[in-house]
Image (cartoon, rainbow, N blue to C red; front, side, top):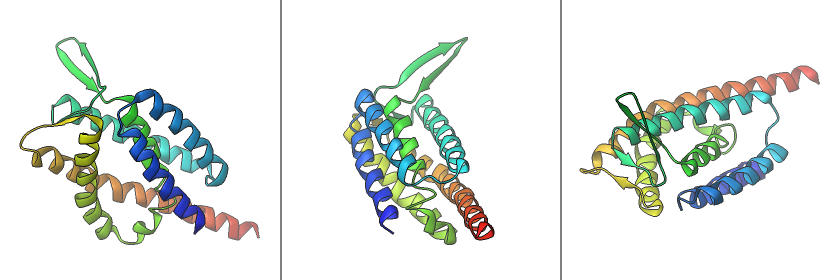
Length: 182
């Protein structure tokens, strides 16, 4: 229980650090937080695979949201190749995705038993987080503001239950392996 609360508290702290929009600070803090996570929480390599995969998918989706102009994240990188302009989400947002991904096997794992609730939270808490985080980071949400928030709600309504399902599988397999080894 203490580890679960520590994981939740660490994520909340890192959320605040990351949404300040300072790439260097977010990077240093994320490296330190991941070291703490590795030392005290991770027990399976599969968790690192989930963290990596969930982060890449989320970061690419936010880069797409950025490219189409629904949310213009502060510190983004514009790249033009051929005739297709692409806007890559900033480093601080990558760090935020990494830190959120650490909660799937720990402080948010209980939601795996309640997929409907995870969808409800994804559709309500996540848009609120993007709204507040957008303002704190100096990012710009397109108008009407409900459009980017609705897009995030739809993305997260699929992404969160899927990530939790995988996390549940990882942790169940870990429990089964520990039981078989005893």
